[in-house]
Image (cartoon, rainbow, N blue to C red; front, side, top):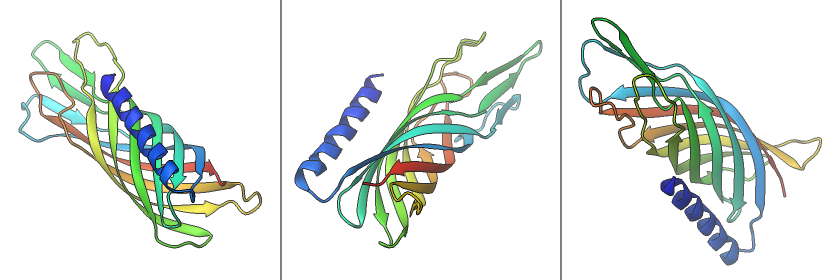
Length: 205
């Protein structure tokens, strides 16, 4: 929880700093929905009686964009995601199965570079993300750990012509997990990467 608070404050201070230095930009807020494709994997060999499973899930998020100038935007997102990543360990009398990073709170912050300044604006995205799993109890008392990730993505801003007050933003983001997310001593070297396919709708000021 302390990491979440620190990360949120850092985002707010950074955006406020740019707002004071540059009168060009305006804040634009919105919401987004999407599909999460997880890839939970081990960097070391896992026991022969173990299995890692990955199933796609869903993402719901809020979006805050800030225009620094005509080519660069800052973007922060706060969301929740649900996916089907789990580990199964077969024993002689039972199967130990538990979820990893199934339900998470996601905080991300990045910079977008606009490739054109036309009505359709493709962009490149580079940033970071912190994913904090919500506690999900199971009979084996396994716990997840939060992780930071590096984000790389592409997307496009498209003005909705009949209103001109809203922008639609399809976006593809690849997140590279930086730390182990599993506290189980039997398999304690698990990392998670994700691909997010999202559609965001935000204001256009």
